[in-house]
Length: 85
Image (cartoon, rainbow, N blue to C red; front, side, top):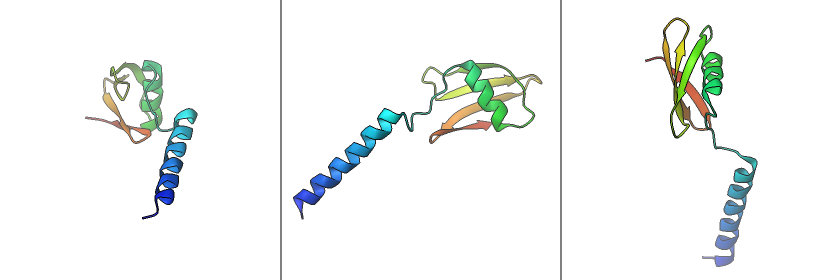
């Protein structure tokens, strides 16, 4: 085993992780209720959001529509998925 190659590979992985962190990549969170409503409306054509509740960890939300429909937003990788229960 070549220890220099292993150390170089590990240093490269850590450097890429640091660059991604500094650029803010991969940390998808819902900032507030307004953003949750925008995401739900973008994911579901014809859905008109009137209110939203964001979870404490900002990884999911419940959005209520103008017709009384409820949509659940959840994180799927770096994106969000809108689901009707």
